[in-house]
Image (cartoon, rainbow, N blue to C red):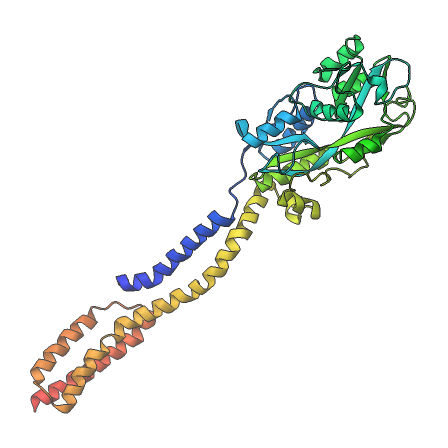
Length: 429
């Protein structure tokens, strides 16, 4: 078959080029890139619960070929600053409720609350005490600068009337604060931490250390809406030692998984799946399946996280390998629309091809008709018309037409022969 003319090629390939350009624009505008192989998360002190939980998230993401790089920090307040500045590529962090909102942390979204972090007040002594005047003038460790414990502790102390001298607020935190309390270097240690935080576990088991309740927990929660009132039942921490010796009202915040708003949707899905494994069981302050959940919404809830909470894992996610799910989803988003767009094109190309092939035959009928009309009317010179016809016939002979269209070429050749015979008869006369 002879190659197509430039015009024919343009008619066929220009629409294809436009389709490809449209597909490229669609992919760039609406399709997420492939999920990253490395994600950076700001955690907290190495001996804290945040870092311990982050290690479990890391193990979960590793199952899917994603490396979760952990960046220890002073605590939740520093985590927020790292997220806001995208320092060291940080895109994820655990943050205590009450520290970040849409006004002071633009560009951040929440993936939901992961667990409760009670406010633990530990003190030495056998006398019952409460959060308020009995602690005035005491040495209280409320965590280092940059920690969420200190940020929330300062607010609680302010409302409790303990933020000014003679009360001494120390920057000790973590295990250092626990050891200081055991050594008598401070009188009270305040943590905002999960029940299995190392410092909390150490002081719950420490001889001579008692847990302080908050009788006015509801009043504190009314003044600080991000606080939750929880009840720790008698003996819940240690049944054998009956710790605590009575039911205690406690203050708590929810620990939220916070991300930058441009984080990849696949990372959100995998992090929340991991969080469901890590935090979904029953605990001292939660029922099984209670977490993760969209509780504190001071920050906007990520649309992808909202979808995760609304719907159970898809059939694909339950039975198909993760890497294949990613490509299937991308095909659904890109491939199906392209197939729909390609259907008219697939029908268009054969029609253009048929038209182009037949055109190479039919285009000679105009000239042939002109010669035939002149012969019938006996106009002009027969020899001149015959020479013109032979030139036309020579061009037609050089046509290469697919076998499927040989009938059209054969008909043209018959018409040329008919006119040639008429010309020869005229010339003979």
